Image (cartoon, rainbow, N blue to C red; front, side):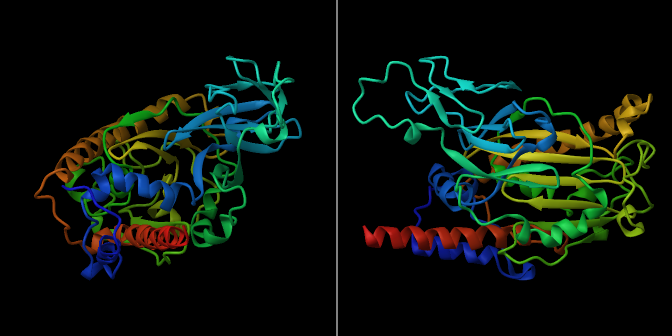
Length: 397
């Protein structure tokens, strides 16, 4: 497909994806394949929206830190000596060397190249042999800082340090999942994220797609969550997240050969929550798959128009991991989940290949794809605002 130019006509054509679902079509294929559109998305979404980068319990003690990246921006998340969570660029302000890798505990960050040193807040503490450099301002050379907000135990950052808070735009999602008390949930830090050869939206859409569940995943590992029991609570494009509920054929359903929860149930769940699976989404970075005994979270981190890195983590009810049989029971869940994920990943890769075709359509939606309509409205609202903002800046210049 030809690369789009961000003309008024192209941006307006996206509106056809953000109308009522029964009339809507999918986004243009170039939105999933074009380098130019990916660069536009950085301004429209990633430089403006809150992004999940991990869990607060990954850095429990003062001095703890971890590193990550999204859209090729290296990021440090640390807990300073006062116990506050901070986030900043990992790029040294001298010669762009990364000042930290991996995770650990430190009193600060030392650039290994020329030994510029920074505090856990990113403040430049020392810069050797800079005394003869004219007008060198140490304060002006601190690591760029990002806004931080903790939501349900997840660490969100915003590249705009003065961004409006996230939580007020997530009240509907927060109320729907309150019974899980995710701030108190427990789970190991996931291993380094896999690199996946498809656009981040393909991944997000697959996780929100109730339509394919009874088709692609047909069989005893998934039939108890039928597509026909999908529900899509209302959301507004201005909201920061949206939901999909999928009723189950029996209470406390879970992905394993028994079809039922084998790990301890989250204690705050209502009867309604125990009779469905909940899919909670905070685009562009966080997607939650929530069962009675386990929550799977996906943190999406694009690194190009047709690829992303993704952290896959697990959360459990407090104390669940202390059960002597926990590992064996979890293995039951993960064997089934791995089978389902393999099916999803296979089609995600083939969808990406199909999107490159000159015959790739702007297809129509089933009612069972209601979450895709919500996602499109979230996206197009921001695409149009960014285009308008950029056009205004060009007019001024």
